[in-house]
Structures are given as structure tokens and as C-alpha cells.
Amino acid sequence: MIAVPVPVKRLFDWKVRGVRCVEIIGVVCVAALVFSVYIAKAAAARESAEISRIESEIRENRQRVRLLRAEATRLEQPARLEALSREIGLGPVDVKKQAVEAGLPAIAPPPVVATPPAAAASVAEPVAGEALH
Image (cartoon, rainbow, N blue to C red; front, side, top):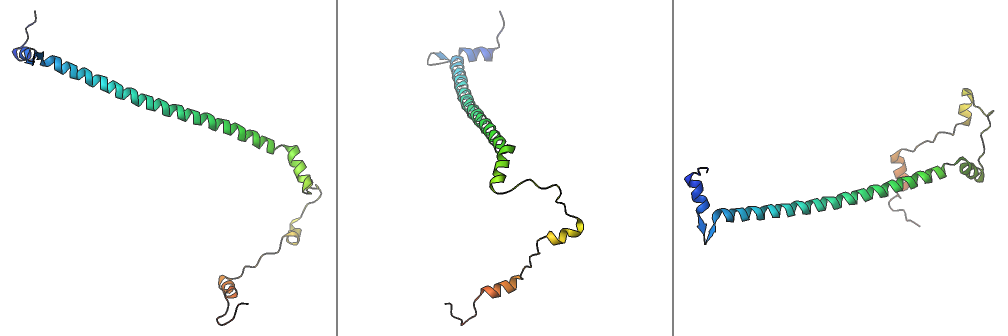
């Protein structure tokens, strides 16, 4: 048999109301383990629910992407664009319509002359004493 030191033997023999102290410590340790397993299981369930929610959002977003790509493909069909351009009076550009560098000023729109901000403000404000009709 193994020789047990006296302090350890005294700890195992120590009783509180007929129950050994080691048994009380064991029950407390088991209760702590059960509580910690319960807490870990609850946290894992929350994480699992979060993962499921994120996966469902990913599936919904993938579906939306597929629908948007299909819509873009439908809107970009050449036949559809050709029909729309004909409705508003557009047609193919004549290949022979070319501009040379010297002719660009003639076809460019005239430049817009901006009024200074001070002049624009004085035009907008009525003169004191002038009645507004």
C-alpha cells in the first residue's frame, strides 16, 4: 500500500456534519463543470443561429445578384436598344460623316459666358425704396 502523508490523510478524513470535505469539494467541482458546459452550449447555440442567419443573407444576396445580372443582360440586348433608338429617332451614324480638325470650331457649341457672382447678386436684389409689384 502507498504511504499517504499525514496532512493529505487528515484532509480526506475531515468531516462536516458527517460528510467528508473532499466529497463536498468534488460535488462543487462537478456542479461548476456542469454549469460551464451549459454556458458553452448556450454560446454555441447563439453562434450557430448567427451563422445560419448570415448564410441565409448570403443566399438571398446571391439570388439578388443573379436577378440583377439577368436584368442587365435583358436591358443590354442589341435588338432592344436598336428598337429604343429608332423610337426616339436615332439611327446609325453615316460612315462618311467625318470632321477634319479645321472644321471643329464650326460645329462646336458657342462657349457660355459666366456672369461674375457680384453682378448676379446685384441684379437679383431690389433697390431700397423700390416697390415690388
